[in-house]
Amino acid sequence: MSDGTPSFPASLSIDYPDHPLNKITTLFRIFTIIPIAIVLSLLTGAGYTYTVGHVTHQWFASGGIVIFPLILMLLFVRKYPRWWFNWNLELTCFTYRVSAYLALLRDEYPSTDEEQAVHLDLVYPDAKKDLNQAMPLVKWLLAFPHYIVLFFLGIAAFVCVIIAWFVILFTGRYPKGLFDFVVGVMRWGLRVSTYAMLLITDRYPPFSLS
Image (cartoon, rainbow, N blue to C red):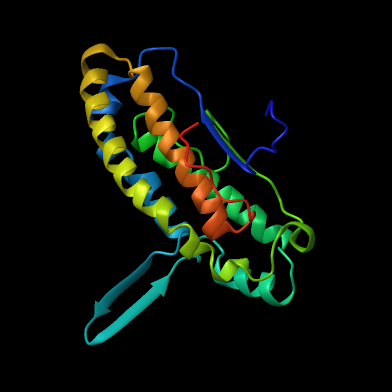
């Protein structure tokens, strides 16, 4: 940044499609997303219950974003295991690729491992140097003002996606202003998640879409 202030350790950008979007997949996006949404749900810890006769069986997928074990590690050991960070980073990237596809921002079907047009980056923290030992206990509470703002921004973004859906069906294009707003809301949410859940920074998230 020009004023010398370090950038926030979480960034998100999505390439604006410079070509007509697929009207057919846009029309049926709520259905085409189902397979990859199932994969994502399995990775984020969805639970399933089924009954055979009088016996109920339960099974759970992987645990999703690592949060509570991470809080304990930061509190008592002041360590952020690198492989936990890598897992959280890759799962977050995958989640945002699926979200971008659902929000009609891109036509490419979300990859489980390739970056594609969704560019997300998190900075690995030096836990002993950069993170306050007690902050994980209060970050979720300090972020409460952001939750309120994001609630209303989320509603506005949903309306923008609905409008964009109709526009794409008629013109094949995602209005640039709506595109930038939806990406901005996603970027805001990422920074809050980075602060309150991923716990990679003690820097308070800015109230900004940019």
